[in-house]
Length: 167
Image (cartoon, rainbow, N blue to C red; front, side, top):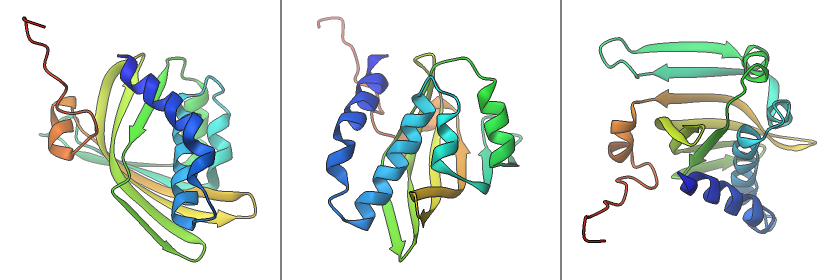
């Protein structure tokens, strides 16, 4: 499962070239920073990319017979995040970036990996606000779906390349 790690590394290396004083690119760069913080061994790094008063809504569809919507504050999320000890990688494609002054909305499918194993995928909806310190995630909603749904959602890298016996 080196694909997500290679992609995360490529995003880290390419990130400075994205901005070019273009607000849409700056918003994408902020989301990439958020994703890189998720992958970081420093569990406090995520706080630098979020507005402390923000809310997170999780549209959990892992059990299709019992979907639910959970919500928590960023403070609660960061407290939970600090207790985690696995390796996390989130890979997101940008299918929509909307801007108006100091607010932005970034939307797209994502995959989430735990210890290099695909955990789930879904759609990210991130609202950003431009602060004195740059773009920050102000609120986020995301779906959590079983890996079998990744192709339907348009998650990058799905369907996985098939390995044939003659290769």
